[in-house]
Image 1 (cartoon, rainbow, N blue to C red):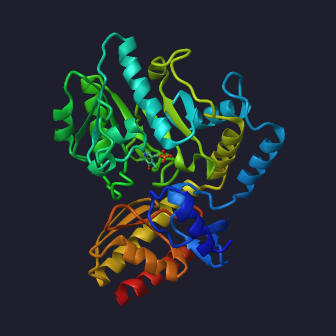
Image 2 (image 1 turned 120 degrees about the vertical axis):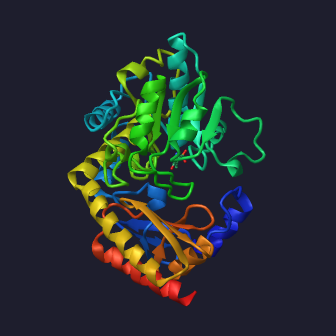
Image 3 (image 1 turned 90 degrees about the vertical axis):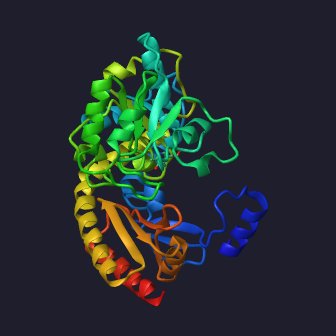
Length: 395
Ligand SMILES: *Cc1c(COP(=O)(O)O)cnc(C)c1O
């Protein structure tokens, strides 16, 4: 099918919650994707930080094919070898002692919220309220939109889930003020993604950790977008040298195969007991085989280090562009999670970049977002910078 034919069927049969789209991508390899007409694009969005190893990574493809020939699904009524290996590998590289696997980021956050509430219930100190940040994004289920501090996500869906309150991001005093005796946890993104690439001050997470200790509440970090190398550390909280009590992952965990995870300390894991949570598909053999291969490749190929180096180079180059083009208001970035605040709409630049065979994305109305696969080289950054220079010059 060509793009036009795909678009016609989409308009007829698929509920449109994403607006009109320009491209139908039908093939990918490494940092490149091809549309239905066979045109090649350099992918600097990676399916919103999902395909971080590049498209169709051979090790992940091999793991998927092998697993598909063995067994696809068993349910969690039985032990799953790839699931326990994935949990072990993740635990070897972060604070979390134990894991629960889900099918998406929102469900990983649901698990985090549920375990935090139940942890305090079990201790007979019920404090169900969770403080989150304004402009945060934690998913699209009713509970996770309630957790997200963006009114546009709530519109038309009331009544929302009770038990969330919001404080300004990167404002310790506001957070402290929000902590009343009913608050049992704070839930934050280490860098706000969908909210427009919001980067907190250097010591913010450290201070939040201290605050959580002082007030005896749990620190939950949503690392669904920031985790697994995106910001130049394996997990973004490792820049701050602190550990949360609970962390959620998803997006790049399966390099394109849907999987989420909630990891926590042994102590917090006692919040769940037999029968208190579950998922039919969560952590199934196919998804966890893909995730095991993905995380292994991420580590083996030193892509976290590459993300740190390339991120620094890319940001510097964007800052140089900002000196030249007044359209750029600000460049914010950590590793390869970079936002460029512009005076025009982000869409204008995104569409002009398509014409230059480059895919970038938005984060809100006025932020152009770059989330390239972590495999990129300096030449790829140069290609994007030179195209942006042309695009901005022509506006
Ligand atoms: C994408 C994202 C989610 C939601 O993940 P889904 O898989 O779409 O449910 C939650 N939190 C953050 C920080 C995200 O970037």
